[in-house]
Length: 114
Length: 113
Image 1: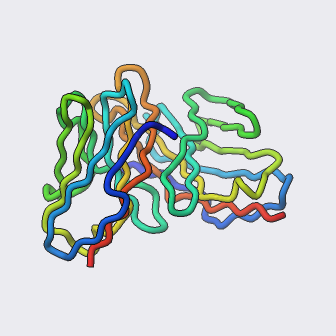
Image 2 (image 1 turned 135 degrees about the vertical axis):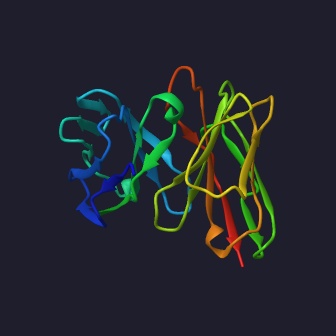
């Protein structure tokens, strides 16, 4: 059973702080990693994807991937109240017939308070 | 906006009934994946359609079935509805040959009474 685990929330940070969201996965064959943001009552919105070990930055967001340790994280710098949402980590065990089929974690609720 | 549309937005059915949900993929995308998201959980993969053929299936019973049409739009059909089928149903489109990045539609909220 391929699993994706996220740190249980809710996570609460003050406005302007760095929010750190973590995710671990069970299958070493995983090749693609995604972070989605989901506001209450809405559908998931893609924030970032990462394929290679290391950091990938996009504006206030940084995704970090460590395949040896099987974890991926998302850092949100200068957190804003509008960042308050559920953050979903998703993994694609690409290859063969499993290509493009995402396995999601349960999500971490982030609250940014003024 | 991702360009992926779904209908209807909300739906209320009773146990034992059948339901059809619809999805139009983003322009240029040939692959549609369907997910079920129960309250407080992450989405769970139901199945994927690529060029009108099923391209893999998650751990869902046969009463969950689908179709993809030549214009790459898709349907999800659920027969013999159960209370536990109450969830947000999401479709996501992608272009399978070039990327595994998937973009979600707004979802259909299904309530089974």
